[in-house]
Length: 307
Image (cartoon, rainbow, N blue to C red; front, side):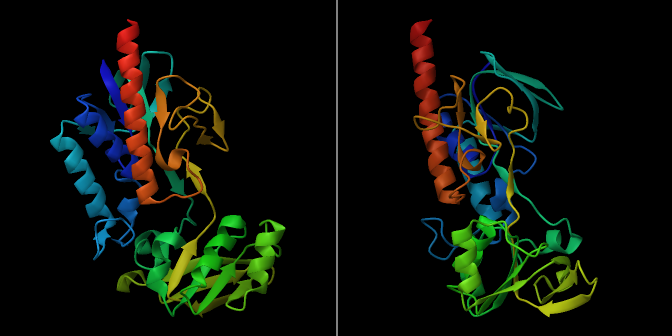
């Protein structure tokens, strides 16, 4: 029986592990299907406090993990496939079953991707899913944003601060975004549109940089190659909440929280992108992990006093 189990090993999960381990709770961290979270797919992180020259995403999450381990956190490379949120809680992985008095869900949200081989190879090398994180690197360059919803419009408008031109590529002939966001993008002098169009390839993975994209018009079937230095995929995120969806209150798959990090199940806490679909930053995830660990510690104290 563990005092606390933490699901996820990104900024939120590892920060929670640091705080829980320092509180002598001997946390178990189940790393999940994307160990290190989305930062493990990023190259240079320049907006995390304390690193004036920036730091590689994988190195940052590795340092957090080592810090948590130094205080006694245990990490296992396992992913939860099933959970029973009747107290004490049970989580099951393909390898084992674990019981715990409290649970911190920091399993994050995975960015939806196009599914191209070249896209996968170029993530962090010109292909990104976060304009706020990476926009600065594209100063004076040409970038494409793929998507037609509010998040694609927000990313595009943000990128106009840095890029020379922003091309929004959308598979339909009208935007799904709200009227106000669509109007802002449509009227912006730096933003142009490729309608009824899909990206079929991104060049050049061999050179580890984006040089152009191949696109196909869905109405005419015509294919063309467009010079481009950056590609931002903005077709949404999928919160990794499948194992808990029928047992804890969610909205659009994201776990609902109140009073800090508390969920609808007493003793279950959430931190990071699993509940935050607005900010999605390493620093906000770390703050949420801290909050969840402190909330779990208080919950366990009250539990001990009530026994």
